[in-house]
Image (cartoon, rainbow, N blue to C red):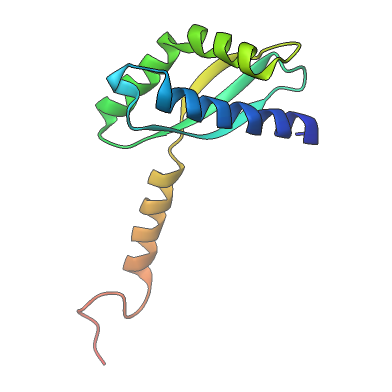
Length: 120
């Protein structure tokens, strides 16, 4: 990823975070956080990784709500950022925090002295 696409991705992430917090009224989006935006080289597409707190059904509902609102979000990005080309948004559930927690739990089980049953 070039510096330009990374910079534009960061701008889009910041604006989307503001839009989700202040403009989107769908309650399904309430616990969604934009974690990362990756923009294609030609700036036509942006993959928006979203972290959502809650159960799996809530996560799926939040991504569906964002997909439903992507026209509004893209229009607002075009107005606020004044880019030549406003990327088409694709929302993807970011499971990084889940994976980190699972790995941490596994490591806690494997490390010596990590459980109370060890002998001293």
